[in-house]
Length: 331
Image 1 (spheres, rainbow, N blue to C red):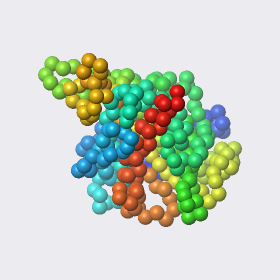
Image 2: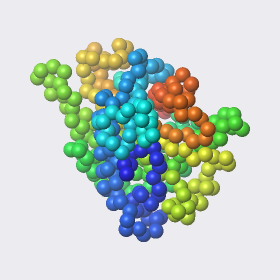
Image 3: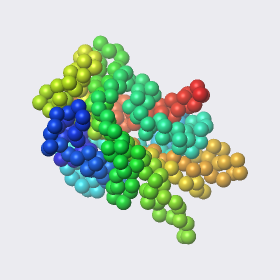
């Protein structure tokens, strides 16, 4: 069974942890992370050929970058490169993807590479709570020591600074009397790389350097008494608010630093340094699917105009850039 799928995994399917009873059937930590990163890269590579882009770019203020929104149906049990028939939804998942390019600068409407690293790769869930209004609580359930993971090589790419943790993330909404809270149990893997193969040169003789970046993979887990250690089950039960509905969320994010080029998606002065040369850019891709549970119709969840998942992923760009600007101003 693939790791990157909307159907949540039981706690018995994840690697051993000091707080778990001994179970030799659990997957080995290094191999588990290798599989997750491989599936994430496979999904990202498939997006251009299997997702359909909206005809127009979207705005997400205060970000100056325009958002390219893509949508697609995906069957996690089939190869990512194989397009899924939208009419066959029995085993398919609806995914939304957004892509943006940001000028690499600590300036109005954008963020520097270091700010992306610090805001997204480090303490991902905790930072999301700071810039996403609905996230009301983040509880760290499990964490694996980075030294136990080390470096992981996947598809010719060497990943370092690999971290894995499990968080209980709760969203609350207004009016709270009408909308029940949602809680997500998310296994998150973050990993940096320095050697992503460069894109093909735009002109003959150009040899752009390898691109550095980082990946963030979030995989849903579910808590059932039969598969969850008792102490962990009690911690989850005591942390969620009354009436909470357990929901599922899966995502893949890839942030890369692009070298300066004559092309820039921004025409502002921020896109150039003091000598007029183009600045480097930060490319941010995020693909996700979710099941909020409850009685929200699936077609509403897929609808941009009605505030479904496509609108939410676009809005997240502005939330993050706005939070980064406020954070920058407070230091």
